[in-house]
Image (cartoon, rainbow, N blue to C red; front, side, top):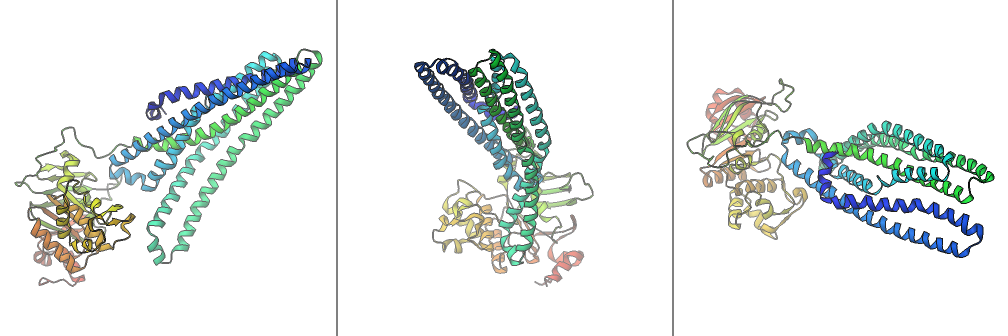
Length: 579
């Protein structure tokens, strides 16, 4: 929890002022039963109307001042809690941007969304409750006991025993319910995951008439969440009746003892009313404490989930002496893999995505990488971008070990067009400028021209200012792919990776794209990853990947003779040496 204070620190004034004013309100509240006792014992008993009016005005003043103190506290709590939530949300989002793909894969997108929204909202509530009630409720409880003891020492045991019984009950309920709050959060993560999958995959689900199956899957997850939530709610709901029962029995005890003392003259009627009032104040305070415990329990579980993200250390970091300039060197190969082995699950050494890869891309060369689905082609691209680090071996970019190059500098040299064409909501221009924020319109149109996207962008109503909706639903698959290619070209990379980025393009457009790349980017090294032989067959060198290993490399003609796997791929696509 000490780490949470870092995000609360800017609101020191509110954190101090809020509880002070709430404490002042509590003091005024404790004074009310005493004033009431005076009205009964002095004003009403003696028939002194003036005294009753005077004390009534005093009650009004106490209420008005208490209201003002409460309002100041509420405002302080609002500023501090919302500010803390904002700071925390910014920090978590910034940290998510820093952590590596490995950590993001470990958490998963749905749980990260839940943690940055629902869990942080719960932490906000915790901060507000700390300011508003964490001091007031215990003070009212303790103040009621002390004041009641002063009025009637014999009633003190009843107040103390009542407070102890309720505290024990609340502690047991809290201890029992804490695991369920964590389980509820995990269930909510799973529901978020299912919802996300169903929304993003709505077309696929409907195409296979899978709505019923997905609905049953969601209902099962929702029922599980409902059962856990009901269990924890049942446990939490025990707090109020148990507290009420104990306090009401205690009030009955106070009245019973008080009635006897009134008969003997050792206690006045006003003092008995005051004792009952303090018992009721203690009841209210203890109910607040019970609810606070529930909120604290939920919030602590949420904070642990948020802290887990903040504590996640990125597996990929820049060395203190990372190379940031003079990386590009024509005398060295653009990319070189030396005995590279990589596995997504480091604990399982037998399940590697890539095994002992040796590969070279010379400066200005076009290299094709082909293989079956799941053979490790896209993993190669991810390693070149340093989204992950190799398990063994090394990758060199222009003669420099990739781990010694600043990641920002690396990604200015290398651009990737991912397998999944991802565009952000905004204009065409906004998306293209991700490649180079200072690019001119002329640069953008040039990139669009090379990517074979000029025609369809020109036909859009606002051209470069045409708005792309969320998920680029107002563009076809081929249009999305061409825009992602153009975005990569805007940065004028020294190394361009096309990761199966022409799968939605027709053969004529794919061919025109490759010719444009060769004509306008002769010095850039191009790595074309594809399952289509026609996309890689004219490459200077083709590497065939099979189950994470290089099964062969060479030109199209050489591989037809020397590599059985490549020949089988060609035959399946009816490609011959003369194609």
